[in-house]
Image 1: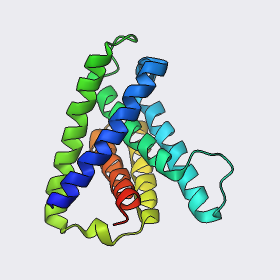
Image 2: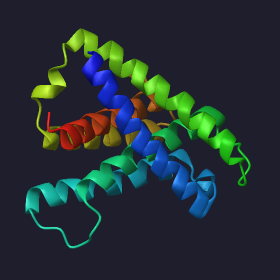
Image 3: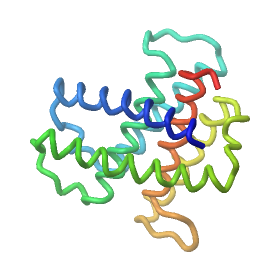
Image 4: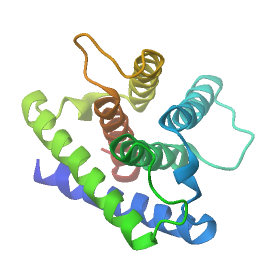
Length: 180
């Protein structure tokens, strides 16, 4: 478990670094996105990964790894949007944005730690393509919840699904970066 936590934290450093650099390039323009748009952005990334996995051909230079990083970062953006009801200023202070990023990635990591304990690191035996499929399933679940105005009868809500998407993407990145 210590190995997983160390690897997870190393991947977080990479993802956060890209989030921070993109904020320097684009500011906090992502704030304009409604949660449904964030979900659709994650859908685009996951579908691209799956198409590349299935077709074994890629015509755009961005690799699958960068798409998983995008899923992590858009998942965090989704969590921020759900929590704040998109009531953040468009020119949010970058330090505040990074603070919100850290807060939500820690929640996702804590959830991973608890689930990883209960499931005995079963994810390490999984294929990366299964993470892609699980992310897609979580996206379609999230879209259904969003179409139901966020109401569920028995299921977890949108935030829980975003956290699962983040963690599946993190597992794919750990397996990619550390050959585990």
